[in-house]
Length: 249
Image 1: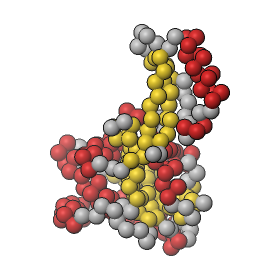
Image 2: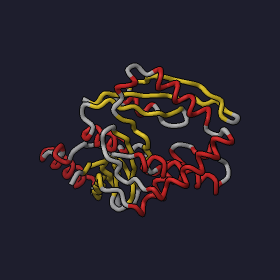
Image 3: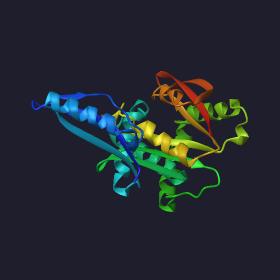
Image 4: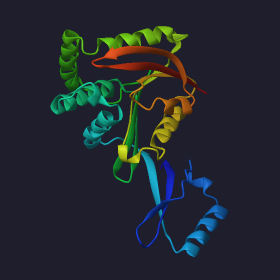
C-alpha cells in the first residue's frame, strides 16, 4: 500500500485546529525519536493527535463526475463558458477526451474522498480506459468548436509552442490532466501525483501545456522547464499559454 503521511494536525479540546506543518514523503521517515518527541509534546500540551493518510489508489468510476468538477474549478473553465449547463458539458468533454487518451491514471485519495487525479499519455503504452462510447460525444463537441472557432486560438498557440520546443520529436509523453480537490489545495496532493508519475515514467521526456489561469509556478517548483510561451486573446481577456518539459531520470 502506497501511502503518504501528508500532514499532522493538532487540535485542542476546544476544537480549534492547529497545524504543525509537517510533510513526510514516507511513513518510514517518522523515526522513533521524532515519534517520541511528538508524543511528549502532545502529552505536555494535552492535545489530541490526528494523522491523515493520503494514498494512491485505482480511480473509481463513480468519481468521474468529481474529477470533472475539480477540473472546472482548478482550470477555471468558467472563464471560457459562462452558462452552467454548457460548462458541465464542456467539463465532461474535456474529461472524456483525456481519459480516452490516458495510458497512466493516477488517483490520490484521502480516506474515501478523491483528493486529486493525474492523467498522462505515454508513447508505446496501452490506453487504460478507452471507450468507443465516448467518441460520438467528443466528435460532436469538436465539430461545434471547429464551426464556431471556439478553441482555435488556444490550439494554434499549443501547436506553435510544440514547434518552439527543442527536440520535439523526442517527446515521450504528455501530462494531459491534473486536478486537485480545491479543499485540499496546498496539502501536497499535486506533489504526490507527480512523484508517482515520475516513479512510473523513468527515462522519459514529458511535456505539458498550461496557462496563467492555472498554478503554472507549481511545475517550475517541481523541476519542469518552460520551453515556450504564447499570448492569445480569448473573449475579453488575454491568456499566456506555456509549454513545460522535464526529463525524468
